[in-house]
Length: 366
Image 1 (cartoon, rainbow, N blue to C red):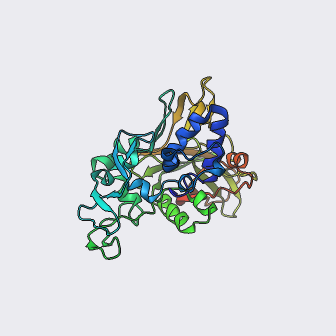
Image 2 (cartoon, rainbow, N blue to C red; image 1 turned 90 degrees about the horizontal axis):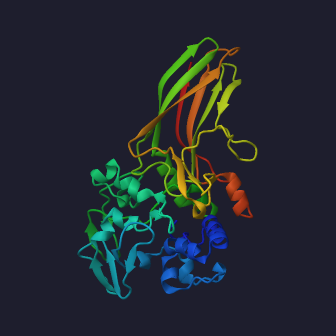
Image 3 (cartoon, helix red, strand yellow; image 1 turned 135 degrees about the vertical axis):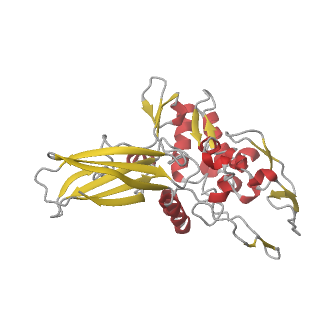
């Protein structure tokens, strides 16, 4: 997805909308992480379709390996020193084509944190806090960094991963893959990269677990209490552009005849969720306090009900069971998608269907 960072049509539509409504300064603020080479070389014209190949390459190999140091966390706080020296995590690297230099920064989460925290450039509101969520959580205390999950075969930490990094190079105890897969099944698949889509789906399926805490029957009602635990992500789930991300519970109860007696979290024919569906995400508010999905309008965080690393939430569902034939079979799923279908329909002319990924599932009976 780093290679698609600038040409991702979802991102591009959002950035162009930001440019029209908030100005080119805001638009280029977004581009500074999505097309660092384009911004550094000044080759992103007002008409992005005429951008240089460097700009369209997004976050590419040479950019990351010319980063000399970090000037902070978030908002493209990288310092690049171009030239013939390439930097990376090995102290004994040798290349016949360029100079090599060991970079401790490349082994740390702070390397990722240069872009994977986003603070509103005008009012200081934290918009995306993937690095901070990691830093304040248990994974950082254990010494598990971003690269340990996102640059190993995965899902989660799969070290050591022995092998040869480069042609003619030595056998190493561990080497880093460069898939840097996250949770973006939608755009990976839409852009034709099924391998990356599968890696993203694999990570989503390893991130959470659902447990049945208690089931009860009383009079003509049943109640079920569930626990959702973040078991595999070193940051909150979901993370990133969390005003757009959607994670929710789907519950379907069927009696012994197969008749559905209760359902919750079901998409309607337009691909939307009912308003009563609880979505685990961040809701941003504009200056009047109204919810907004336009990050450039955001003035405050109205609420954030996401699940922190190694944290959990509990939910209770009650539903009528009068007239049902027992046992009642209950299927509970934790589902995720990158964005609401309505948002994609507004932004993209082709209106691609946003895939829904099953993160976790449990069945029970009453």
